[in-house]
Image (tube, rainbow, N blue to C red):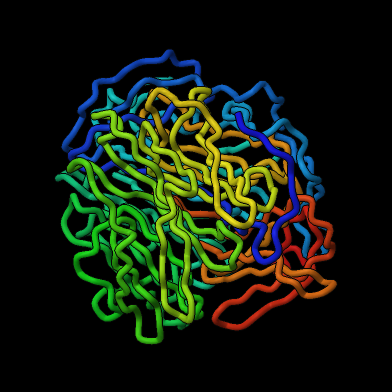
Length: 581
């Protein structure tokens, strides 16, 4: 395991602002693959037949125990922080003590085992939907296989999609959520009807001739303490991921649904008409009619104030503007494929090199890794835009992103040790059952990662979420397992960690900057997101690792198309001036 001392963040985005949530992987029709290792289950290791193909599902490989890493103690289920003080601070926690980069499995402690049995997991989204200050999780999966395939670990058959409400003692099932069975492939929370609470978009991958296989993408409305299905869309496309964004700046969040190459139709843009009704605006807003992909990233890449769209594996970046989108080709985004079951997958956004521009990390869903022994890295792209001319440069090899022995469809950019340098969380499983981490050890002159985690047995997870679920100031990692034989683990971050700041945002089109209150020097910059990694919806927060920075208080600026909002914040706090004023 690689460790290093904490350091102060470099000036101008030396502290990575990350979007705190999950990342994800995929299952594509006609593929064979291995799924992630479980932590938090006492099931014996087993090898499933490789080569379950033809229905958009995945086949499992050897399961690793994944119980904990490096013998550190769990942070447990209690919050070590202070709750809302009424001055914009929702909660706080001192920098964490630990030994290097370490995680411990707390799946059973947080009551996450039983609710997620009977699932071929494939989607997750995180947010505080009930307003109690704790992270809640949506988890969905493919429920279209024979019932007996799900009858393991106490399950009687396929489980419906679940909404789990978090709290200081763990998670519980929200019985008011109308969980349904379908081929659920992605999700995100967003306030689509502008009523002040979060609605939920559950993306489906319809394929087949029965009710479960045909169930389409559904928008679920939250009203008070109840949920109801409000609208359906994209019945004709095989959805994978979804993003919420206000394309036409009318105050209503529109939707972009990424569709894969294995089903009918292609990716779509939907205009929000109000009242949770939508119409197809794909052609009008300039999205090509042949854009097939597993994931989107939505962020202002060229820093012109308009959101842009990146589709994994497609050189065509959609640059936003007043009339919609224009295609800008970035050849570096295309991949050389090794086989017909290989696909670029999830995309994570963050400032990797501290220059104030949004960089990208793209995961890989290459069956060639598990079937043929190929070694394939997750790719790293630095944003070198200058003068408004977009340029994305592939620095994968020189940055030290290693060839991986298995898939990592989900990726997340997260400052795991809060040292001011963003790390990369992959969904590849290390030998000890924890996620493989690419630890940022760049020195300001060059971006460089060191791998934390020894080579595992070839298992991986489909998607995941990164968020501070236990309020101890460190990013925890939730991973979604494909095989019902395997629990979807929650890893508590027990690393040695520095100072931090987390800013709650209300919209997925916000840019957050923090600066010194003494001299106005910009310290870090980050972007809110509505989609991240593969098949995952992130929590509406922007998070900064601050190392041993000594700059209290900090000035925070939240910029949106509606204007700017400024306020002061203290390090080691989660601040939200709208919710915790």
